[in-house]
Length: 434
Image (cartoon, rainbow, N blue to C red; front, side, top):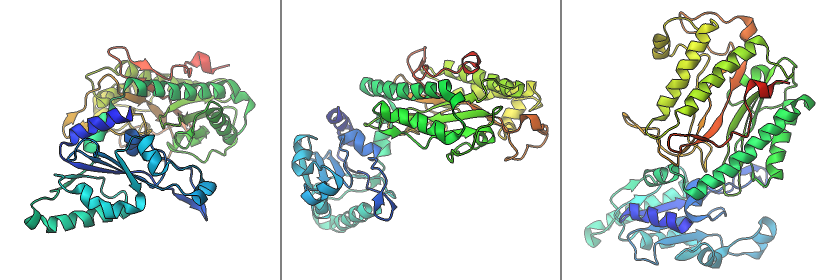
């Protein structure tokens, strides 16, 4: 699988040399580090899950000289402290590098590997140490160009080649996504069935993340959002330590990450006391209707903005009915006079990254959906005093304040019938109320 991806990339490079560094360990505090998380592009092309590595993809070289790995060497003392290393031999025999070297040889060997390349493909600004070596090497080759007649003539971003590849998921990737999303959905169901036994956000976080680990996932795909009451009006709330109030709602935005980094991303909003208040139910019904309409439109040929605007129109009309907005619907949408209540887009790509790579538009051209793309669909309404009310819109009565509702599913583009990968996480009012 990784070899096939490399072959596709090399065919796209057409005489260029790509340099893709892996991730480094990041210090947490003192001499402790955060759990290692490999760079997604590096992983996508190599499957190599060790830090401080560098991969070269050399389309200007002969077959058998095109995939080069620089890795940490086998070293007994380091392995005793930090675990197994594949080393040079493992990089070649297990991970199928045409040639592997110790990473400390990168500066010495890079000029020869770049020789003959028409262009360099490297993400500038993300890895200063490696970038300095690459720029110095390139500068020296440019200086020698008049005498040797050969040097790369520019640097391009790897995203020009890899984003499109990663956006369209293979059958294997779709199956991995199904597993990640299924585990995530089951964890949300665990919350739904046990919310009456919990009295603090942190307890729910422990329940859901514990389930991820129990089912064999690496852990949460992102910082879990467990937000009760007014906390749900903070979109990226992660403090997760407030006590529950019976009449409040609980918004849970959480998903797991598998050991090969494929992710789920689901949001459900539960009535803590088992029943929605009249105001909560009115808002929930609007969000659910908007989400269902948006999901129905996840079909080939439409854009993510088209899906977003379908949800926006339903939300605006719904908020007008309950007098939280007023005026002509088209004018409200054009002036964005709804954004104090719904301020984010309706979804994003999902894959190796939770907010996965891939363009939504290219200049004035909106990227159309294709089979194999996976995206989230997550409209919401958040009612608080945090943002100013647009001119001409009504003041918000106290009874509405502190209601934050989002409903998010993960959807595969699959011909004219979208596949909701997260359907195991129930969301109908009849399922949420006791």
